[in-house]
Each structure stands twice: as C-alpha cells, then as structure tokens.
Amino acid sequence: MRAKVAKKEIATFAAGCFWGVEHIFRKHFKNIQTQVGYTGGTTSNPDYRQASFLLRLISFYEACRIEFDLENVSYATLVEFFYKTHDPTTLNKQGHDVGNQYRSAIFYHSPEQKEIAEQVTKQVQEKLDNSEPGSLYSGSKIVTEIVEASKWYDAEDYHQEYLVSIS
Image 1 (cartoon, rainbow, N blue to C red):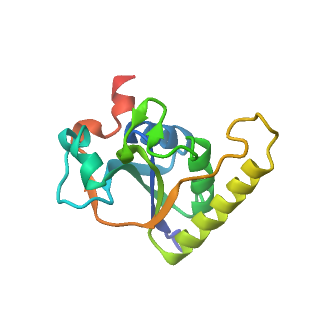
Image 2 (cartoon, one colour; image 1 turned 90 degrees about the horizontal axis):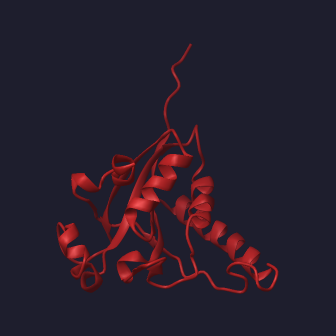
Image 3 (spheres, rainbow, N blue to C red; image 1 turned 120 degrees about the horizontal axis):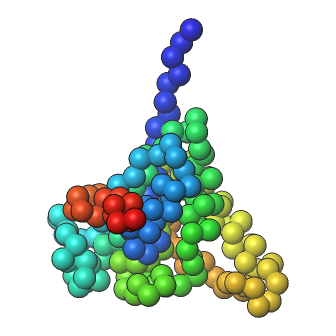
C-alpha cells in the first residue's frame, strides 16, 4: 500500500492585527501550521518596532502565512473563512487597529490561487449586494486586495502564537 503524499500549499492573508488572524485560523483549522510576519513592503527585515510607525510608510502588511494540506482543506475554504473573520469593506482599518499595515489582503502563491481568490471574492460581494438593507455590511464594497505574494519576513518569536501564549 502506498503512503499518502501530502499536498502542501501556502496561503497568506492580512486582515488586521496578525495575532487575531493567526489565532482564529488555528482555532478553526486543526491541521495547519501558521507563521505571522510582514509582507509587501519596500525595505528588508522589518521588525515590530517599525510596525508602530514605519510600516505605514514602507507599505508592509501584518499577515499570517498558513501551510495546509489540500487533502485536509481546500484553498477556497480558507479564502471563504478569511472573509468571515473580518470586515473586508473597511480600508486600512480593522476594529481599533488603524493604519495601512492593517488592510485586508489575500496574497496568492499561484495562478490557481489567484483565480480562486477572485472567484470567492466575487461570490462574497454578490452576497453583500443582495443582502437585506440594514444587515451587516449590506451594500458595502469589498476593498480586500488580491496581490501576488512577495518576500516574507517572519515576525519576532514572541509574536508567534501570541494569543495562545497569553490565554
């Protein structure tokens, strides 16, 4: 009998503070590995001290990378879940976190991921367009960026699984 071969992929999402993004994905999906960090910026090796001010100037996102096995969960499922975990209609803001490092983004790692992200985004937007007036996000437009994944920088060790460590 042949051993099952894992079909590992990477998904990268930004939806506000990376602690919350990592925590909600780890809580919901048991068979994933996560890493929080910075992507999309214009300098090398950013750190959290820069996040408080410079990330706004050098265009980094606080993001979460998820390693997952396609045998356990689809990329489309992760994208759909991503949209359920935050407000994709606010620009540069999630809750009390304000600044362009907190913007909503999906970073695709292949043409297939890009196509899936665009398709799921379209479906979510259609649901918003057709939702009852007065319901949450009704009539709002999604501002989530769908961009090609770029250089990734791990956040400092004390940020990894931070919300797990304090609970």
